Length: 421
Image 1: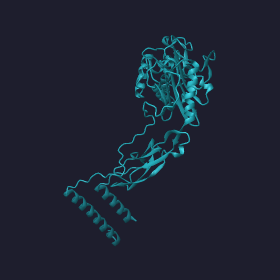
Image 2: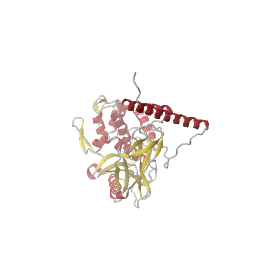
Image 3: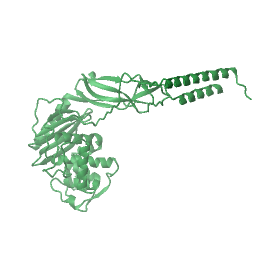
Image 4: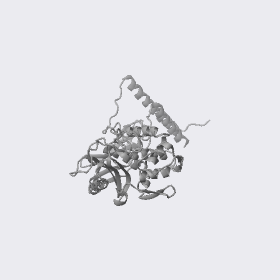
């Protein structure tokens, strides 16, 4: 029989004393019926949600002192969606082939989710072959790949190819149009109604410059592969027998152009959603109801010039970087590290990026339990008193609440470890 040493006896006595103290404290608190108040930290943060795709206010922060020769117009910074210029941006108007931005958006979503592939074969239906206006003259029964049809839409604004893609994604144009309207509601496009996937319908089929900017941004930011097609200046279709020429002349005339779509009917006038990128800054301009083809391009270029001359976007790179350590009250773990959950984009006046201020707000102590990924605090990004963005600070580890049973278990485990040594 093993004899317990004097050293072990002392450790056992110490453990028993600690256990008695814990039991006495617990019983005393229960007898007194004292209900401990929730610990309040210096910074009270219950919920912080940062969404780069959050909808902006429907009015421009400031209106430049110039007018645009069109029925409505808007300029936004693509990463943040910040409105930099707006004129009649919420007026519902016919939009012609600008409609195809939503068509391309849903096609790209289907591609990126694996529902369809660029190499999939599509058999042209009778309905698709009967489309008028701009087209690649599809014939019923012809077979093309998704990529060939997408190129025909993005470059040549082909109505027949748009319908063929719609049928490939949804089974019918009617079902696809329902998807278009559902997506517009999901994106917060409050003044938009689609009746077809081409824009050939004028009456009852409408949108606004603001709503078009929203869907243009969704397409470019979420599905940047589309830029490969929207920047093609010249290509061919049907094994080189049909020329595809980009209807967006800015692709060749304006430096940094990345797309995106033209539109014209007698009712809609000349329309253009144009996008461009220079030195990491991206802008989207939308112009509806211009009087001529040249006007829509020159006025769109002027809007983009205004953006590039006055504004720049800045990426605040913080994702997964350490933000410090916080103490955990009544936790199994006494302290845990915290990290930044994401990066952030902000748009600022040119020359003011050095004035950007970062303010970290996290409590010194939090109550257990704490789960990994739980929002603990926030990093606020400001310029001249204006809140530009916020990045959540999250727990990089977890800590369960320390109950009496867990405390005893830890003490006994520690004692046994010391005894074995």
